[in-house]
Length: 107
Image 1 (cartoon, helix red, strand yellow):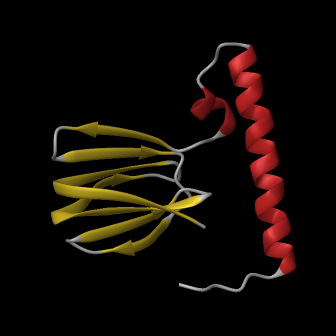
Image 2 (cartoon, rainbow, N blue to C red; image 1 turned 90 degrees about the vertical axis):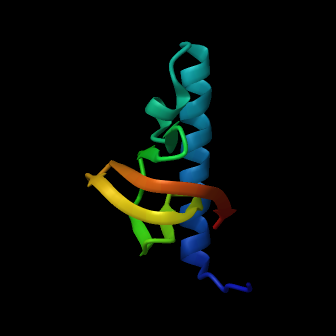
Image 3 (cartoon, rainbow, N blue to C red; image 1 turned 180 degrees about the horizontal axis):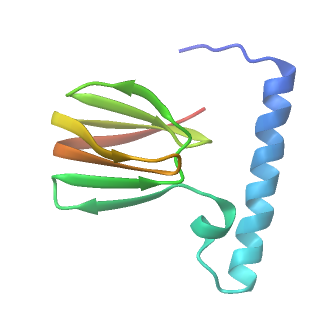
């Protein structure tokens, strides 16, 4: 898929990546969890039936076989059957159902 992005959007992505890199290095220096410090996405999977996503940036697509989530630097696609959003806040969301596959696509 070919996408054309504006120069401003590209500059914004570069600024975000520089900030995340700096925060990740600071977390390593102080032996802190990088995902918590830098606001990076964190996944917690319980069996094949539950997935918790922390520090997401919003839903892109929602259905009972596919849920797509913006993670800031990538799109997280969750494939399965009977997928549902069990809980969702501004920062966290929990997907339940039978999970078949998880994919990442850099944006």
